[in-house]
Image 1 (tube, rainbow, N blue to C red):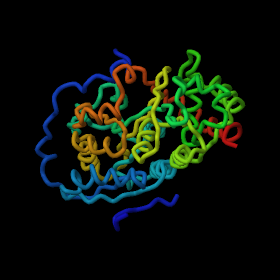
Image 2 (cartoon, one colour):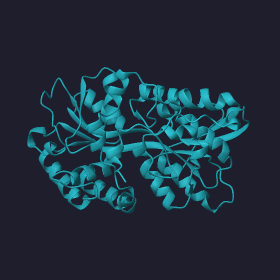
Image 3 (cartoon, helix red, strand yellow):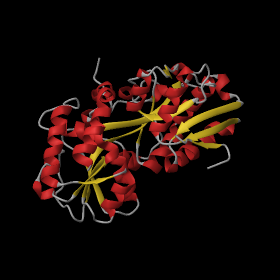
Image 4 (cartoon, one colour):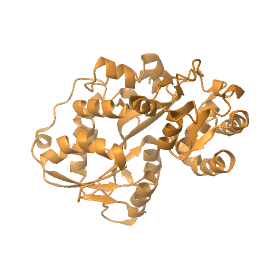
Length: 355
């Protein structure tokens, strides 16, 4: 962490067009975007390797190189969201760009703390996969899906679907993480012909899964990955990108795309309503979506890039992205439904599944 870092204390359907290319050719940056800039930009982001990759591929080469000073305000999303909401009463806020997932963007927009973005000032947005352009207040960046990750040395015939996890033969072999509790509720609601808002039945089915398989519950992604690597569990339900990261570190893992269609997850950024430097924020958003930067991020993180023209090799694209059929089958959560229920779901999860 540098001296400038701060750490917090406290039409066609979306899925049907996901595999399509971004419309039109790349838009040339306007002259004022091309000139050297001055000023300070406060970026709220996660820490760790996520922030390190952001600096390496986006901030250092494409933003700071232009003379813009970045102050990094790092922390987990609950604290960073709370800070943004607390600044609602201020005439001028302290954050220019906040890194969040799509669901958090919906929640924060409902709290009236995000601005719609003028995407005409973000030229690279023209190349974003059309199906990801669903919200005027959110810049799509990287995405993946909740898949079945398994030890191929121990599980020669893995579950082909979410529904096949509901089987006593997997007793003691499945690992879940508290971080994805609402994804698991949606996953359970999705089986047997359901959908991602079929969450009351989803909760009932998760209790059945617990009775059948006694899954091991981990606090976070990292602990789940360690459990998969050291043999505590043989199957994990987590983001495809996470499975690829763990496999890249040498674990004998493979990915199974569920036949129901994977529940999608997308990360990106937003513009707070009281951002001190909105013009610099637009430069930052454009840098996030740079073709070369997106290729570097995909290679380092194994998330699929939102920019359809990211300069990925054919091999890397085949690894991190989805086939046309898989992309069309992705299940995007109804985040208005999630925002309305997530507090109750978390309490239910902690009482009935996590303990």
